Length: 386
Image (cartoon, rainbow, N blue to C red; front, side):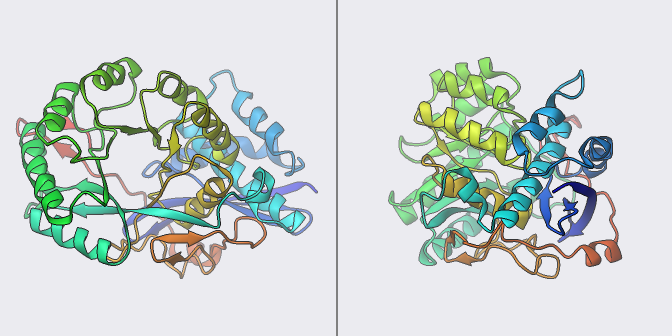
């Protein structure tokens, strides 16, 4: 079997952008993959254009060798754009190999260790009332784990201004109120999306009673493990870090120094299923669980379900489409075959490959317009992290 074509399909779905790829073979078997870098699809397509001549004519079943060739095949190795392209290709190759052997991808990873993949609800809110109402609805619907995504800066505003100290004071008060309403049985985490500094994070955590939060996700930027080490010593809430990491090497200091307690691995960013499985093994050695990042579309969901099925140290998969928030990123017009939620979990599929299909004809017909990620500013006009 030989690779004959690699096609890219950037698409606009529900106001956001996605990049899917299709790898075709001379055996008539094809595979789907996806990139995880939202807003920079054209850059990833450029990398894939460079990789195409290297891949045409190769055996798609030699996944590990292809990964090494793509990663090491330039003097400047790694980087998020390069590994986003490698991720998409790697996932597609697993889809091909599973279909060729007539088995689901998890069988290529050692077989499944669970029948269902449990999910946490990503809960976006901009007021205390919205937070409590949505949380109660999710708990009633059987979602025992909530990951809060505060967006209080958007309430009633066209221009988004984010002031960290103002935010942490408001959000701490709201989460304390939420705990009083729902009790301590549900698991509650919060994603501050890199918007805070070390002292701001300490102030936020210490302003709430012990046990209010079960984890905090990426409160500060991740470029400096030393900064996170310092923060780790000052607060007692578990961390969830890693959604932007582009290799096992970026995960290494956070895992080996036990800085993080949850590995937020993204199969569409880290280097595909090949690299994600290595991160999972590294994390297992240190008793760190996987809490996979999954904010884009169904191809990422499908690939992550197989990763989760084959990994002993998996906890919850991120889910955007819930009874209280449905951004429409899983549009069935584009994804006629995709994983389907059963309550708050996915049944592990026995379909060959990833078990997903993408409507390439619709993607070509609708075209693509690049979409920028949102921007946040402080009151003084300076930029801050979104």
